[in-house]
Image (cartoon, rainbow, N blue to C red; front, side, top):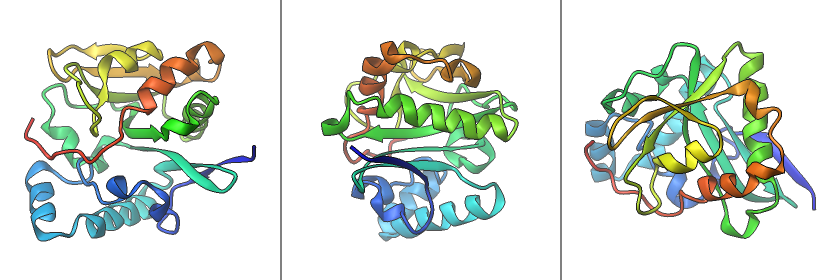
Length: 205
């Protein structure tokens, strides 16, 4: 099984699941996101966002390929590039951290260690760039796949709560801890990264 982790670019954006490459939940503020959906332009807005972040900050995602088939991805960026982040009651993300926006591995490819390799690759990238941690807004009331990852799954792979909230706690993972992850976290990562599976509804926080 040949597997590759490739930086996300405009050239391989189409390799994300269709629902994800036209989703602007994180890339736009709630009002602009609703407007883009009504105007039928979310895919264009996603491309514009990615282009701007790549030019200004650099790599902000990874796409996972197994035998040249795209099977998963992760998206991350400093909160200054994530307008939706300011809408959360537990904002802001810490200045030494990057925000984990969302991540996904196709169900048929879970259980193969791809999640661990993907997160460790991101950790190495961000450590080289001077960041110490990755933070995420978890969904403490998670019931079905959406853009927000379930808080209990984040906790299961080593995230710690830094700002509690009954619905949207902010959680933090120290990047250096990910580099020593062993296979024992793979099942938890499978649950976490398999949690984004269908078109999310844009809803006010």
